[in-house]
Image 1 (cartoon, rainbow, N blue to C red):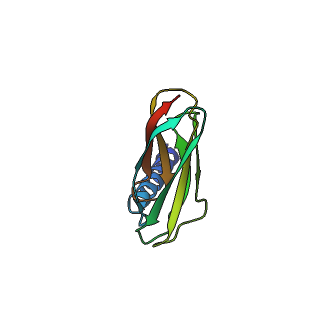
Image 2: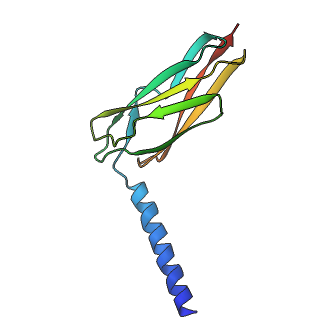
Image 3: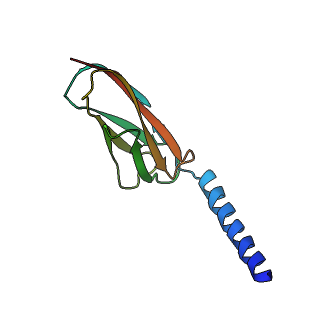
Length: 127
């Protein structure tokens, strides 16, 4: 029983330390803008926007994942660490297959002070 309690205590200490380290991260995004409006776009022609960010923190930014909200979108992002003062990009493409207004989001997971960030695109697909 003492071993079990000791293991649990070590596990709690490890999780707490890891969570605290993430909260105290000194890497931080500053995006030029976090929402892009394509306006009216033609049906059947994919559109792309590149979100640009600067690392305004004191440690490199490492992006782990950029996840689109649906299968109609894809994202590419800077895979190498972005050093303080440098810029990186997240390029998003929307497949304008359906004629309708749209709003899509992209969840960015990283080592920054705000570890989950959301970027948005919107517009209207016309015929």
